[in-house]
Image (tube, rainbow, N blue to C red):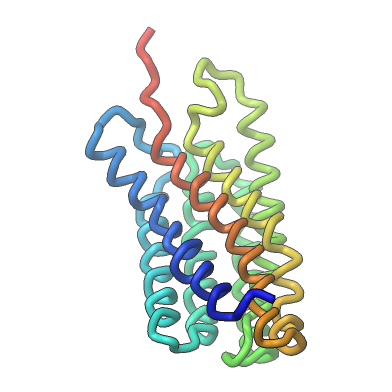
Length: 224
């Protein structure tokens, strides 16, 4: 059996640092100047720095051996709101979709409050994270459909919006079951087996971070 410390090393020192990949991609894109700015995603850059800052803070606590579960009750809803604000500011967003997404934001915040009361800061906010995954799953599916329907000379793979919503789709679909069952794992798994679900979901997060990095690494459209 793999020892707990090995699992923890894999999560904290190998998988978690990939949360900085999108920020590194943005800084590289500005340095090179050959990549398109994600102008169709207003607020994407501040949102990415916000998520990375929260990730660094949580990882820093983990490095220090300090539980960071209570902190996630605050940072996860803030990142959720920042993500939906990016979606709401998309220039081509219809009023109907914008209203539905505002309702979804309210439901997510309500789930965060309910989860805080039910799970307490001692456990993960499984109510909120499950609702968040469901909302991301719906929003990304709807927006990817709209992107694929647009008739344009710009290839789909060269659109920052495509990679943004693809990242959310991977995040949501890959973490949904984990979010719904994570507190069960915390209560039932033995000390050495406990990190296994976290390793699995962090592999999903790695894919999410690399897809989100592609938002900032789309080539500039060539002039005709």
